[in-house]
Amino acid sequence: MGAQSVLVVEDTEEIRELVVTVLERAGLDVRAVGSGTECLAEVRRSAPDLVVLDLGLPDGDGTEVCRHLRAESGCYVLMLTARAEEVDLLVGLAVGADGYMAKPFSPRELVARVQALLRRPAAAAVLPVPDDAVVRLADLEVDEDSREVRVDGAPVALTRTEFDLLAALASRPGRVLQRETLLREVWRTDWAGSLRLVEAHMSNLRRKLSAAGLSDAEIRTVRGVGYRLVA
Image (cartoon, one colour):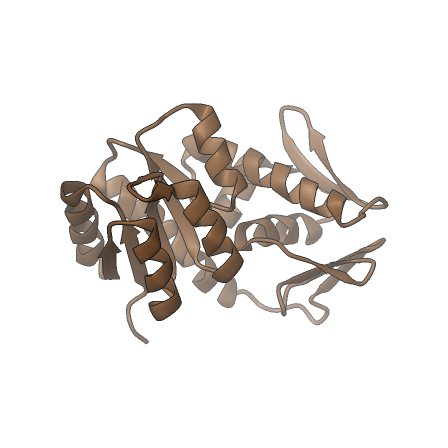
């Protein structure tokens, strides 16, 4: 099995070269482009496992590129931003990014975050599959084998991260899962700075389930603790 592949999308040459170098040293197959247009073309051509995507690109905003990626690809997206305002970060997450890092960043931390995202499918693959991998709660069905979610029989389109969050909750219905627990299980990290990743993606997940018409099962917030899925 070959090395996992990463596409770096960064218009600043010095940063692009730095990111490529540190990821290649970590044993990853790395390609790099400098614009959103090149990014989409390369994703269609080579189907990378993960895209490191700069928020500020010469031919458009990285969030728009991320929207296109989410419509066409199942790859993970780690956004890089020089704008630390919370609204920018949460807008990025709302379009389906799996994580973010603010510039300047530590090369070691970048490698750790990329590896944590790439470990998620491999980690899930070694877990024993239950006899009945479909969890049904009222009108909600979560099929872990096919990674499909249905509400009243109709499929609901979720990102990888949203599915992983819902699957974690559905595997223990009624039980409160701490945000830290979800961070470890879904993002494979203990970094406390990522806790708002959980909140942002949970908000997106709730919105999609509500838009699909889910009424008899819901994700409830347990203030100061975490979340639970109830029927």
